[in-house]
Length: 334
Image (tube, rainbow, N blue to C red; front, side, top):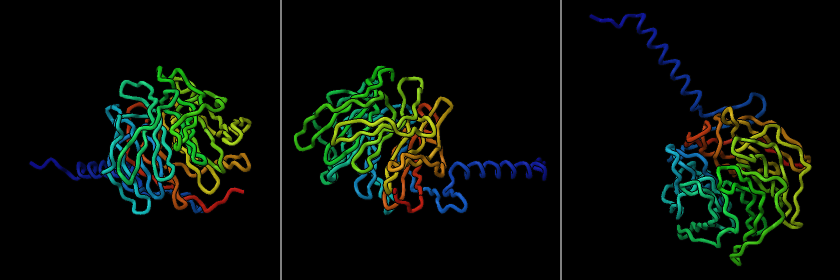
């Protein structure tokens, strides 16, 4: 007897349609804002699922480094995304030590990875240096201060590492600023960041480092602060316009003199926010949000576009392998 009646068939087709629409909504491949000329597209998926990873860029290559997997285990994996070809390479040597919540920056054709947490959530003082020519990692002198989830940026050939957590359950936010000279392999202590915090974002514009958002404790005590560090005068400036939203676990990158701050998390979940800061006018503008809310991911810019890779769609050990590409208008900061 055939129990699959027309009514059953109609119900079945409706379920399939709803499920398909839901998947399309989550895995959508383009997203635009009418009459603005700005839009998001999907790039090739990263080979692995990850969150709490970071990114560093050399030319059109974006390295996604460390993080932890869906089991909550720290990993030493490193993948390379080619922004020109929209392809991934997995034949990159792994970090010498599995780490998550690291900071990374690139200079003179090499990638520098500072701090992070080991498998037992102990803050690391390690500095690892990757040379793409030899596909090998070496170690620099360790940082004076062990820390997880700091920020790292290069300015004029010097690596600056700021803030982070002392590794005692997110309850010891740091304001320490330390500078590393690749030529001498030595660290020096610089002026402390005015606000102790970790899980912040950072970017460089015109030789100044901007540290944005983050949190000051374990329970997502997010801040909307933006503080600017001038390496030449070794001073911090604090009287800048705050972010429109308080976020931690956010990512940032600079493009055409602007800073784009993406994603992040709060107690209720992850953000898909995309906010643009103009250092010249000290103003914020809401941009087209990401297609998928995420935190703990890497961001980079290349050829007029912004790349947001990986990250957790929810708080906790949630991961993704999403690559989203933002196509902003061709602007120049005045």
